[in-house]
Image (cartoon, each protein chain N blue to C red):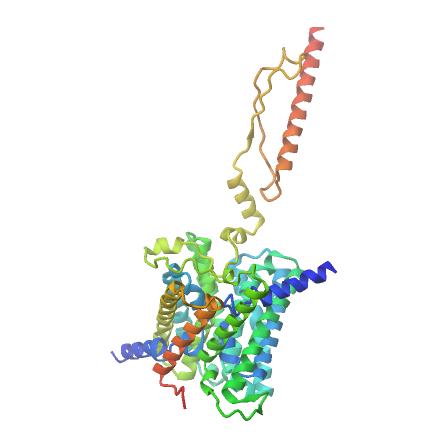
Length: 197
Length: 326
């Protein structure tokens, strides 16, 4: 029960209180690009959650080895990148053996695996001193954070697109950046960080 | 001269109309997080340029015949080769800068900008073109990053390169990611306003396709998985790059041109041959070359050669028939 609560609290932490996309900018490009193509949300979220959860759990398990635990952050970052590469290669081998996969799915897997959000999760776990269950929770939370970010940005983009009073030079990406900045500000407020002194 | 002009034009287009940061919204994470001062921004621009140049040149040299799903992993390997020594040197010799940058430096190994340009340009072009593309993209990325860093340093800290400007009002919150996004938004608007005046024919909105914003995200998983997937506008034909090896090319060619049959109808081609040649003759020609190598001209020359062969065979038969008769 306690482990389950740890998992949930870590997921909520990563998803809401420290939304990694809005508060830290991890995986921001992917979220912004996908928000313009909402049909991609579900498949991408599944793959991102898969990679972030597995990489997160493996990295935390590896960190329990005394030799690795004693090393600094530079060595850990090498391990994290290596684990991500390893998980991707194993996944691709599995996918190729399974066979019935379209090039589109393979492309999705590539983009979902190699983005800053997935690679940042082991760093967050390492710095926060998360246990294995908390790491799994943070991995799942990263996937949900991605969904939250894409849905919020997409909702805003729809309204910005309909708004005829926006000046011409602000239409498109400028308005999208400013809207995303306001969302980021809101999440910074939720995290409890002091914005105005 | 024209070569120099085209290089300049590519750099201009990349910096202005197709700016990777302001209009394509690629590689946002490092700029939003790291570019909080001029010093850090220059550092970011230099690292991105080194990584980009190396990755694109290596991709152009080595990865053209590697399948897409391994290529993506190899870009990360190249990124690690470039970024991790820099991370080590920064940690050791510039601890203050390292503290500012934190985990964002190792995360640059998976920068989407690098993978996008390697896929879009490097694996389809020669080394020179890839080098020019890397140069133009890293220049346009770096220049925006430096401007963002410059503005955030002035507005948030009231300093330039650490020297105080004695500005009475400061906004330290701009050092947070939302500050970076806000500055990027206003910069994008300024650039768009400039482009609308100076190059009215340019359409920077084109590079960030928003035509699918209103599409429903509902559907069965199978439908969603089979949906068109090209978020970065890399290419229209997803399978074109996926199919790389000779074996697969051959297979694809076989699928595309199954069996080409040319029907040549000949009605009395020559008075002398008319008695011996039947009115209709069907000649089937199987193409052996792959679809990439074929053109209409090739098809036409094949047909001509078949016709010549057919004529000479008939002439031979006529001669032998005539001989027998004699």
